[in-house]
Image 1: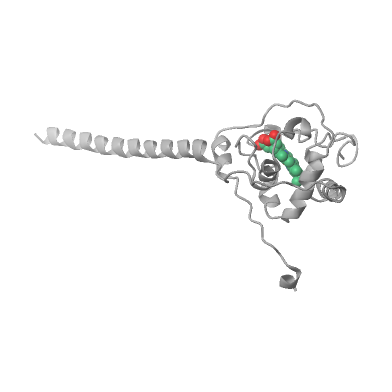
Image 2: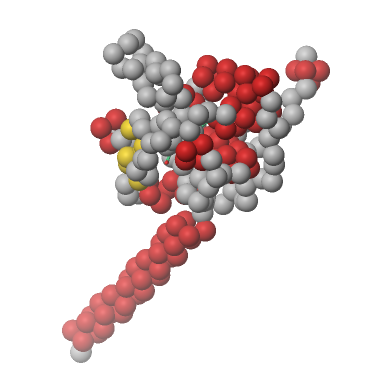
Length: 206
Ligand code: HEC
């Protein structure tokens, strides 16, 4: 009799534990499906049109090459020279690789951002990629592309950079897409954030 009771107790514990385990697995599965299918959620690309003129292109060129350093990544670098400057004429070409050999959780290939690749993107889609980290097709961009920082810059400066990259000569360079290893292939979807621009007026800073 005693033996039978012990057996029953063990069985009920096993039932309870398997329920807890099952429910936990179910919740984890729901969470992973949510992260994979519902995120990143930064909203539609804004409906905007950047007015392109020479002054704006020049400002964008200065910002993209010397301040926001887009071309430190999105161009071919000459590593034979000190600090690997970008090679003139390759601006926007892409092709540099940041991968596991550098300790990164995936293989990130710097895309071509000349009109050859992004010529069909709207200004809003380029804006959203730079400031919120989401590609035209809704894919999250790994933050080695410093979109979390660019989302806090001056909106007009981003527009100048868009004018500049749209004026680049198209360079034919087909590239493989980046990929993240597990678990970054899930985590990456939680990273993009809608940019928040605040107007900073000089008199507020004084
Ligand atoms: C430190 C390197 C780095 C810098 C600096 C950088 N990017 Fe990127 N950029 C990347 C990488 C890497 C990707 C691809 C990330 C991925 O696929 O997960 C990317 C993606 C993009 C994309 C999306 C292209 C596509 O086909 O999906 C655009 C547009 C872009 N960058 C523009 C810019 C602009 C404009 C700047 C400067 C304001 C800039 N990037 C600065 C590395 C960089």
